[in-house]
Image (tube, rainbow, N blue to C red):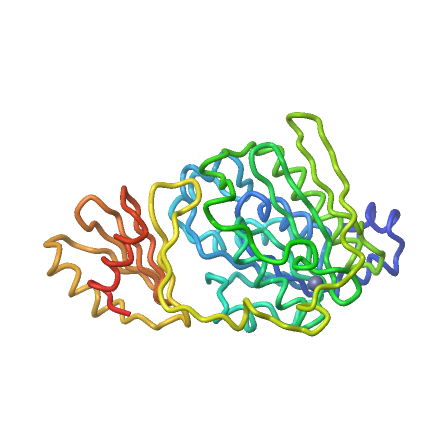
Amino acid sequence: MDRYRKQRIYLGAEADARLRTARVVLVGLGATGSVIAPWLVRAGVGHLTIIDRDIVEESNLQRQLLYGENDLLRPKAEAAAARLREANSEVEIRPVIADLTSGTARELLTGFDLILDGTDNFEARYLINDIAILTGTPWIYAGALGAEGMVWPIHPPHTPCLRCLMEDPPASGDVDTCDSAGVLGPAVGVIGSWAALEALKVLTGKAPHTELARFDFWRNERQFIQPPRTRCHFCSEKITEFLDARWSLRASRLCGLDGIQIRVNPPSRLDLEALLTRFEARTGQPWKLSTLALSGQEGAWRVVLFRDGRALIHGDLSPEKARAWYSETVGC
Ligand SMILES: [Zn+2]
């Protein structure tokens, strides 16, 4: 009973007790997620689902506090769950290795008191926003890049939604990524901690900060943006365009790494055993099959294929080339 004593002194017994029954989902276990998750687990939420599609890479270690060198090449969700359970075994932690798409978002994000954004892309945030519109679940936008970051608690229909402020995601060429802008670990740390703090407010029944908070920690700038007073027709009429969208095969550059990610929607179910035989015959080299993934070398590229149809192709190649390779070798 002593574990939460200091927090209970501040929050009060009733608010603290509310945390024990809270069900939270966190999408993305990169730098922001690495900070948000431990705060919630140490604060003693009842349940935390953690979702991530990636494996731990060396270039993650500079800022993704949940992982160490021993975790390299492990799925982030799995490594994070192990670390979080060490911090607090009382919390039910469910790791999910999956990609958030219009095909998976409903199943992955329904049934929670709060959705937390640890993602690094707008595609995922607009999907989360659609789920929030559809189910009335609050969510907290958190994003950081360079030495800048933003936090914004959103709860349609009680507050404006993401689309009230920004109707559509910026075109992918228009936004910096951590690849083009770089990122400083402590800046993400502040943003993740701020998001976790707003999460504690939401979960204990206190109203969160209503403005969009934007910081540049390097230039010592801060800005509080009042969201629009009017509601967009998407949230007022519960129109969920991003959830309803469908695509079959999509290729995008990996953030911070040389390579391409391929995603299939709706997720397929790859026969990795059959592909193992096929790829070994094709490349004349041994491939490695685990329960989760098939990996090996295709010429100069290192390829990891997941059962849901996803592929990571590391190396110097374009998204178009990656798509072509995938269609040709894996099929779709
Ligand atoms: Zn709206």
